[in-house]
Image (cartoon, rainbow, N blue to C red; front, side):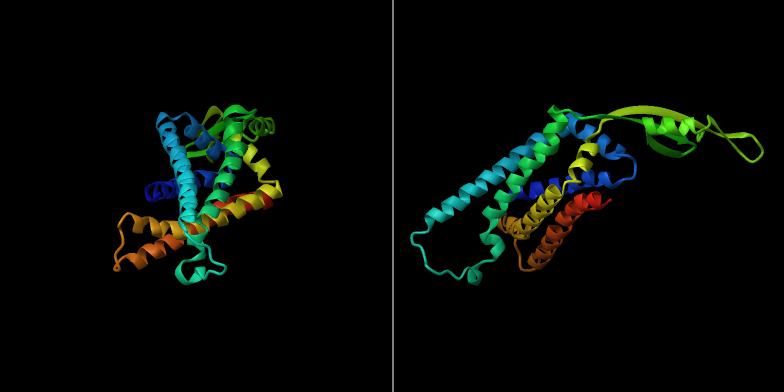
Length: 251
């Protein structure tokens, strides 16, 4: 549980870096390029299988432990003082994990399944390179700019001499960014996403620190540092994830 939990913390960071590409003002080019890499690279495919296995193991092992702990209680009490011996986060790990697992299933169905097996639109991009500067345009948008004579094949200096040439290249990607942006215009999904990030945050607050303790990496000299790093990670990473659908909903 500890090892898979820490591995999934690393996955969250990598996944966040990719998702932040959605906020680039480049017509979805960066994110669509990232999505293609994530689904075609042999190395990423192996990493994805390991990640899916880690998620399933972590989820079902956690449920099994919760059931085992429940059955191990020989007696039931009419009143318990849970706060006296443990935090709400530690007592609610199974509940939080279940919420996260349900969200992952919905999330995969909305995006991964549609991208792999559904009807995903394609977007053609034109990349213009002028000197050392590059700009990306959807092909249809580029055609409009050409028709408006916004571009020329050469760039002239003040003396009428050619000092730069324009290089043009084209590339086509599945337009996952369009599917994501359309989904993030649905308020129910934005609320579900944000709620799920709260669940992940609470799950991490206890899970990050306890993982180090489980692995024997506990020392009074470093425990406070580990706790503070875990708390910062548990707040910053889920908050960054949650900000993406919120920004895209209002933008």
